[in-house]
Length: 300
Image (cartoon, rainbow, N blue to C red; front, top):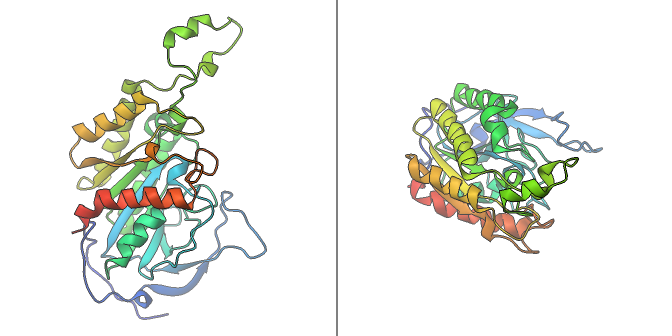
């Protein structure tokens, strides 16, 4: 086992220090994930476990698929040596490798670009904590099974000694639909048909009330954290769903230390979304750069 250097309390995002050496954290231990979300091949993915740094820059990201491992292809850039990930399911830190642990999908992740930019500008360790779940609604995060997952993930992070200064929320695609936009159209649906095909998304109030619960729960565990909300409402459609965007802006405006991290709806083209919903490497870099710009003042 290599020599271990024990740090003090994790500082807020943007805290810098000198003297970081990646070998101080690495253990000679390999982890082979057994998640069904990761495709197993003959050469199974191996993740090298490291000691979680007790002082560093910690970012957490969650929501639905565009906060998870949905970027295609995976990043080809060289990962900085001071960039790591925390898996809330195993309660351990690992070397940074896509697909990230603790979140769904087997592709790349938008946060890779944001975290890499941060890591390049500091000698401190940078730790990413992902726990998004693809195809999910804000209602599931606020009131359903994912409210339990958020509790478990946040408790795991807190017990590890890590203190994320910034949480990045990217969700809204599942709750936004624009096939129809007039609720009165519901009365024109034949009696023997479900009304779901009208394509009406959540109302502004429904989304705002649910997102407020997600923010409040995060603050219960990390009251000093910042909470970044992306404007998100487009997936395989050409228009934005304004009620959700308005709700996201409302929550950012009415809560302390809460801000708009990026307008991801504006990143929408054949080159930036390979299936009209999920980000290509070009789209991921654009969104990752927007994330970095929105939190750069917090890094000083």
